[in-house]
Image (tube, rainbow, N blue to C red):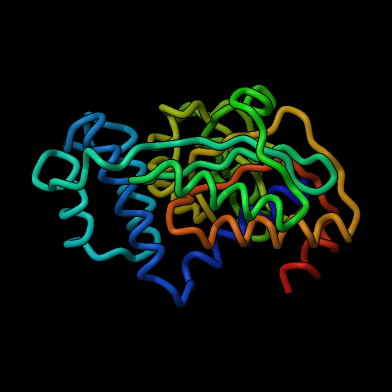
Length: 249
């Protein structure tokens, strides 16, 4: 999973320093609003909201923005009911499976834009259920292997992590979705830094790509993530780490 993990870390770093921070905040705010609408405005009793808020804080989203997003979700904004979560399934270059998570107030518009991006970059839109079975949702925390040893990460197992994998220059700590917050908190309390901590759709089967296919796929993922409505793009690719570094520039 070298390429997949490396890309996850690269995406995280890109997001933190993204000059188009306004667009990023819009996406994060929508996620908070939907989570608050569906599970209530108290993050202590709403794990989805707690994760959305943490992700916003990781991106340095102002506290006022977060509070307004929660208020919209709990009924203090007329636009909250118009936003819905939609997942599109499709294929990229080399037959890579794609799960594209979006929050939109117009699913016809968003669907057309996702289809256009896929077609333009050698992909295609699939039917519901066509690739979802190839992914399992879990919590994923990436830790720099140069900064910490695997023994130091045993605190994560004590906190509920299910597995620790080694991937190139990082450790991947896997958790059940509901345990991500607790494991993240245990790492923070132990003084262990991490590159990212998020809910992901983890591939159960991966497709190996060559350099040309990998470059085309990265352009496709970038195009999808440029869409204002698209929040996350999950893919079951595997790319050599050196190839990935060249592509990422």
